[in-house]
Structure formats: C-alpha cells, structure tokens
Length: 226
Image (cartoon, rainbow, N blue to C red):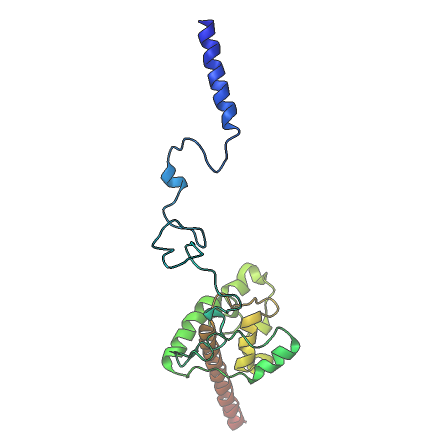
C-alpha cells in the first residue's frame, strides 16, 4: 500500500514539475480553447488562410501595412468642398505648423463649405455634443462643465464667443485652434474630422453674427431714445 502511495505521489509530483517548464503560450490541457483562441484574425498578424493571402508571394498577413509616407484621409485639411469629395486636397495634411508663424498664417484660410441650412444644422448638432459642455449652448461660457461645483473649473469670460478677441477670430484661426488646442481647450483633431470642424465653425460664426446684429440694433434703439 505504501509503495502504491509513493508511486502515485511521484507521478503527481513529476507531472506538476514538468508543467513548470512548459511554454506558457502553449498550455497542455485547455478547458475552453475557443475562448483562448479567437476565430478572427488579428490585424497585421500572419495568416494561414489562403484566401486572405491569395496573390501575395512574399507576405501572408491579414492586412498589409500602409505604404510608407502616406497620410490617412482623415488627417486631410480640406477633404470636402460643399460636401463633395475633393481628391485634390484629401491627402494633404494640415498645412500650418504649431508655431506663432503658423497661427498667424491660418488667418487667411477660408471655410470651404457652403453656408446653408444643412451644414448649419449639422454644425449645431456637433457643437451641442462637443462644445456646449464648456462654452454653453448659446456660447456664453456657461456650460455644465464651466458652472459645475460652483465654478470650480477654471473657465470664465474668455470662453465666451462674444468677447472682442473671439469675435475678431477668423474662420481659419478657429480651425487652427481646433487642430492644436489652446489653453484649457485641447485639440479636437481626433474627435472631429476637418469637414465636421468647419461646420461647427460655421455655426459659431452664425451665432457671432446674430450677436453683433442684435447688439447693433439695441444700440440704435438707445440712440433714438436719447
């Protein structure tokens, strides 16, 4: 009986010890192998699927690496003109570097999209999602983030679109800010593509124009009363 126990114990010990030297990536017994080895092919991983690698003599990967030096379409400066695809500018990256010189040069850029109801409506929708939490629904720097916790977040009058400095910003300068960010505001280049940012800027410019027109009318009324 004792010999049987020793033999059994030796076998168990040998099994445990041998398992310590196994390749961790190649376990012996798997309870649910389908959970450990997904059916889908990993991106840029070598593939044994002949359909995926068909026609390739030197590469057998699930996806080819992008051609060196190419620029993704999403990084293009002006991928659309009036909502129509423009292949003359879609592959060009933003053409102003992050510098005082680049910021100044951005003033000359114009919004390539047509001012119409569709673009303004989409601009308002995007503005409500991405901008209003800080700048406020009406652009008065009274968004939910701004006024939270008794104005604990350090944002104030400069975030209103109706200060003299912000009213003077050109469309191109606004785009530069959405590209690189400014002060407490970070870049929105990864959240909104260029076309979407131009629509938001179009909507903001409309708000500013409405504000200026309303103030001008109010001043004229005051002069009449005086």
